[in-house]
Image (cartoon, rainbow, N blue to C red; front, top):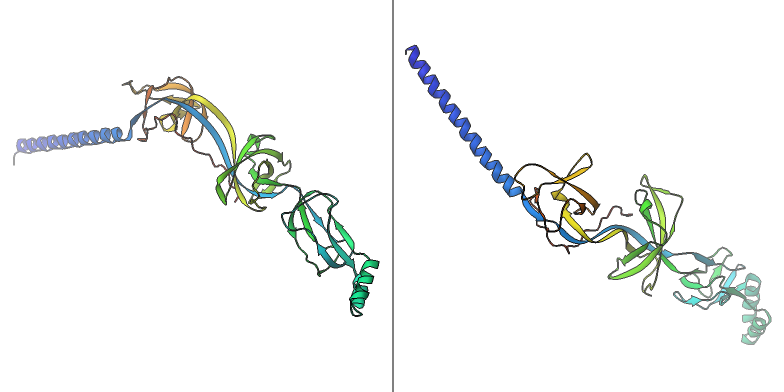
Length: 320
C-alpha cells in the first residue's frame, strides 16, 4: 500500500470520527434541552395570606396541686367527695379517728351497739378540711383504711392547663399573652383556644437540648378532658394578609440576594427581587414582581397558582 493511499484512508477515518462526535453532541444537546424543558415550568405570582406556625407536643396538667393529708395517724371514717367534685376551701371532705379513738370504739363494739354509740358521741372523729378550692383529681383512701400522717388522702387541683417543653431555638419567638390553639390527641375534632401564661426562666436539659417549660391557660376546657392527655399546641409566629406569593422553588438565593427568571425574558439574566416571610413552600414577595407575572420554575413542580392554597405548618420541634 502506497503512502498516499494510507494518508487517504486516515483522512477518511478522521472525518468519520468527527462526524460521529458531532452526531453524539447533537443528540446530547437535544436530550439536554428536552430534559430541561421537562424540568422547567411557568408559575405566576399569586396573592393570598401567609401564616408561619410552630406546632409542639404538650400535656394537660394541673396548674397546681394540693394534697390533703391526715392531721393525725389513724383510721379513715369517711370520705365525702369523689374524683371530679368541685370543693370550696374550708369544706369538710372526710373524717378520721385517732389510734386512741379506734381502740376505744373497737372495744365498745364488743359490748354492743348502744355502748358503741355512747363512745362515738363522746369522742368525735377529726375532720379533714379542704385547704384550697378546686377539683378533686385523685382519691387515694377509703373508709376503714389505716393511714399515717404522710398518706395523701385526696389531691385537689385549682385548674387544668396545657404544658409544653419548648426548644431553645423557638423560645425567643414566644411571649406571655400570645394566643395559641390546642388540639387534644384523643379529640382531634376539638380545637381549644388558649394563651401563653408562663415561660420558665430556667432551662431543663432534655436529650442534650435546652428546653423551657411553658404553660398555656385554656378556656372552655370540656369536662371529659383529663390530666395527662396529650395535645398539639399551635403558635402563630407571623401572619400576613393579601400579600404576593411565589413558590420557593422558583427563587434562587446567592449571597443573600434573591433572583428569579422571568418567563417572557429569553436571556439568561436573573431578575432581582425582595422577599419577606417564608413558610417552607411559599415566599412572600415584597418588591420586584407584580401579581400574575410569570416566572420560570426549574423544579418542574411549578403549578402553584392558587392564591388560597393553605401554607404548611412548620413543625420545628416535638417534645416526644
